[in-house]
Length: 156
Image (cartoon, rainbow, N blue to C red; front, top):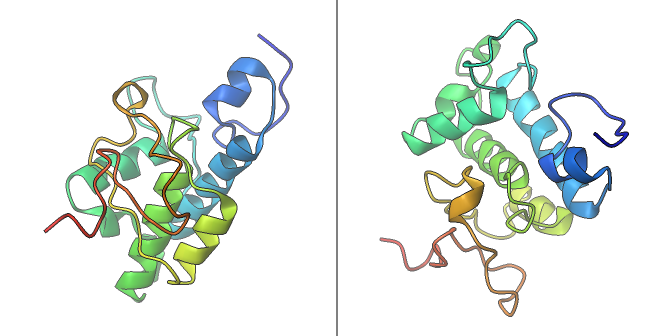
C-alpha cells in the first residue's frame, strides 16, 4: 500500500489506491463532509462489522428507495427545508460517487447548492462503479445528466 495521509471515510478510493491526490479526490471528501453535515453522523463507524454499511453507502441505499430525506439528522426533528436538505444530500452523493469520472466539479456543486442549476437525477444504483461511464464532455457545464446519459429534462 502506498503512503496516504487522511482520515478514514473521507479519502476517495482512487487516492487510497494510488496515493495521488487530485481535484476529484478533493470533491469526494467535500461530498462526504456535506453528507456528514446533513445526517449528523460520522462517515465510518469503527464499531461497525465488515458487513455493515458506511454512511455514504447507507445514504445511497435510502436514495435508491426514494427515501433520501430519511438520512436527515434526527436531531433536527424534521425542522428543515426539505428542498434544501434533498439538495445537500444529492449533491453530497454525486460528489462522493465511487467513480471519479462521474463526480461534479466544485463549481458545479456550488451552483447546485445555490439552486442556480438543477440537481442531477442520478440512477438509483449510481454508487456502483462498474455500471457507469462519464457523461459526455461536450455538454454545457450546467447540464445535469443521469448515469444513463438522459437529461433530467427527459425524465417524466
